[in-house]
Length: 461
Ligand SMILES: Nc1nc2c(ncn2[C@@H]2O[C@H](COP(=O)(O)OP(=O)(O)OP(=O)(O)O)[C@@H](O)[C@H]2O)c(=O)[nH]1
Ligand SMILES: [Mg+2]
Image: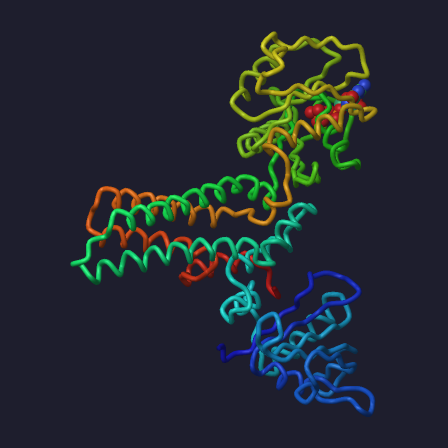
């Protein structure tokens, strides 16, 4: 399908035991023949070796040995890209892998673009678009739950459901179009009702999928939780407790944290990016002023706020201001330092147990209350249980957008059919709906859509 052969380092850049250079395309074996010197008597050139075999030898460039390698021969179509593929395992470290890659590139392959191997896998029919996206999700997943969801999607669970939906809609469309072709035959009330029922079932199914969107996005990107509060309230101590290691500097000096610190932790299966911030107050110097400006910036971008209050001190006017200021956000009030005598009195509205901001008592000194706080975080961002069935169909924002369009168009179809509008109108909207559903699995795509998806991949994937 493609006439050029691509190559890239498929492993992360940096030092490691091994690195893998991947070559894919019609010339993969020809390139490998030119640069690979097999060791041992019975060894074969890559182009004559059987498929799915591994060969020991050297990569040679201008007559000199570049590296000692293991070379895998993988013949189309049983490969990731469905093209002839060669994978060279060389020594890890930036230089060996780069020299091997350079040698490959000098001998007939070109450097792959980001995600180009996966793009070829898609265009050659090895994966559909939702599955290709799952490859990226898999690589980027930060918790086991996210990984499980990505694996389900890669296995085609979401695609099956989407294809089923699209098939049903296509059948309805065919039915409608048949009536357009024979205008003398009126659509009978019975048939019309059947069509309406099918369309309504389709909308119900879309709604079911759309409900998973929020959770799906949390699993993929994680949620951002800003830790805010007065200087010395124990924000950095809380970050360290939640991460389980000493990431941020803690000291009794007010204004210790200047810059924002971001770290991801696994909270009950959800990736949560915690952002420790500079304590909110009037800045004492230029650096603190900038720190506080950054705190406010992370506050604005956060989906969740952990407002840390020092329970060993009475509430101050500044605390009250911040309580009012973040009232509109999803937040948890963390009463810290409860190992000390408690002097903090929260305003009466926070005593109501149903108040939208849960209050959790903790001590960052001895770790008390951390498990309850983790539960509170999970409960606030994730409604209900995490069910295995949900993981199969966790849609992403692109799917959400396409399904939203499909839903609108299907609703218009239903309306047009009910109002006995000309069947051409009915078919027009249904076409739009079918195409939008098709976008999810890549049955209908544009070059721009593909570019935007595959550019998010790393090179070599
Ligand atoms: N007794 C007690 N002391 C705590 C607790 N949590 C934090 N501290 C102490 O409170 C002081 C301030 O803690 P930090 O974590 O640096 O506070 P912070 O909110 O990050 O402060 P800034 O970065 O300066 O805004 C340190 O001396 C901590 O040891 C706690 O639960 N109990
Ligand atoms: Mg701090």
